[in-house]
Length: 420
View 1 (cartoon, rainbow, N blue to C red):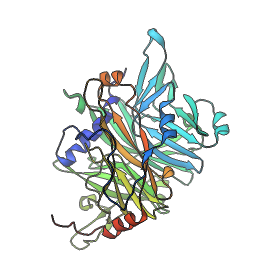
View 2 (view 1 turned 180 degrees about the vertical axis):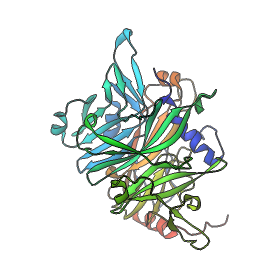
View 3 (view 1 turned 120 degrees about the vertical axis):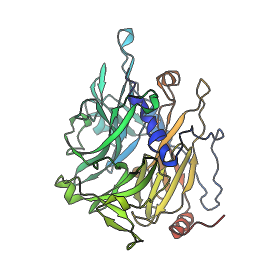
View 4 (view 1 turned 135 degrees about the vertical axis):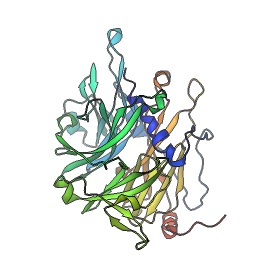
């Protein structure tokens, strides 16, 4: 059984824990769901039973984190996952389960067409929606869908979008690091752009090219979330400030014409300076604005057609709170954060608490004045995974917000906070 991939949970603990200068366990919250105080929001939130059942139904695909989605067509959505358990069903002669570093699923409303696709790990159909789960290799020796070319490196999904019929994915490149503390035995050392030329084909038939996008010292960590317009790909990023005890959440963009020409280093950053205090796009990232100060290492950013504004959903590091910010523009100003859900504390069999992280919204699930979002839970090390096999799955929920509350948040964006 592999044990390097299990430390995906440490992204939340380390990469963003440093942003707040803490490395403690998440604050415990009461069991059950907290109601929101605002009388304007009037949330109607609840689990998306259909998707949650689909994640928990496969026989061999048995849990993952990440849960980032990209709409491939009006009837087809791609889901990308990080570290994934594959139950091999080999009996006593071999390993009963294996962890791979990434996998994918295809969600489609055309079940007949999906049933004709050959090569998936397995298919499930829930409420007239068909899901196919994919990895490479054989069931007895499963392999990740996306594989890094460097020895001893692997990918965790960052974010992605479709443009000009191609799938563009920003992936986090990871390698194992020697450290006496197992929570620190990984190094997120670079980011790559992976371009899939045939995303409508089955995932095991995808052909793709890989291009580095990292800055020289990996000062900019791309791929927390991404979105697009007709001219640019946008990415929320971490900016490491030295010494690496704090991080900014900044916004970068790159022109599609450059990406299609494979000029993957021509990024611009939304920045402020003495002469341009309101912000401007600049090639130097050192003056980039900190637009979402409490963002986590996985998030979401897109234009919500029903709410008619941009939304960002995320979980701050080491927090059970799922938060929403809104803006009229990619660049902001972004509103103050609104708590839209508190992840209930999950007690494990040994009495410890599961880690919750990686909350993000999903554009294909967000219509009208609702927002579909997911979060992940992780029991911890290998022993905890074995003892708590029902924990390591994404959970999808919906949140409904009143239009009046959205307008209130947008009108207040960029205003100084009231003094206590």
